[in-house]
Image (tube, rainbow, N blue to C red; front, side, top):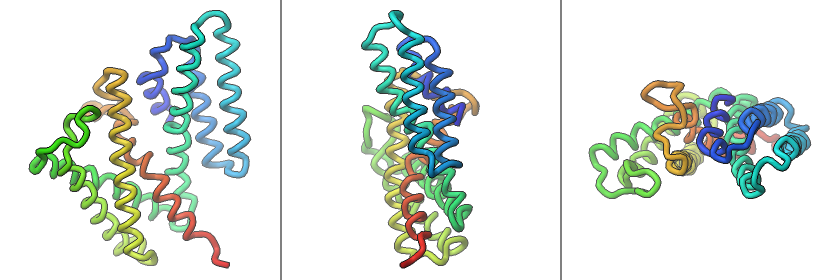
Length: 237
């Protein structure tokens, strides 16, 4: 997610013109991501220390060189960035560490990718009414419904071929909730790009945009899938 953090900087942090902000943001995001995945017990103090260090470094490195409003704006947007580029990706990766983690991680991906595929075709052939034109002019209500259907189909498939021990009704409900979160992730990414006045978050994948363009839905859906899979993996009293 280092590339994702770099893309996030380009979408918002760079506009403040504050020296060192991008490398410090990327480095801090990677530290926070690593601590959340590999050092769960220590993640809270590491997050506190990491964010405090980030703020401290920029306050002293930019002393008397930037407007206080710019510095405050940078810190506010950086907070969203740490969630987007560290906490949410860590939640997705931590699925792999749970019992049956590979199946749950595949479930997450299929929920999002099936949802995206069905949303595209429903929107293309049935879409008339716009969903949120001010954020994403191409998204339609029909596409949103199609996305929900696609995610439900993915959930049924995972129940048949990977998560058969889970109540299928639960899997379908998880898929519906995760798809709503994934669509929100798409809209959030669209909002970021509209504010930055760019078409894509990056160009690492020609014709498909950047890392954040491809993973926004996965990042937002991950907490839904993780929360359920985590709690059912806890030992019963």
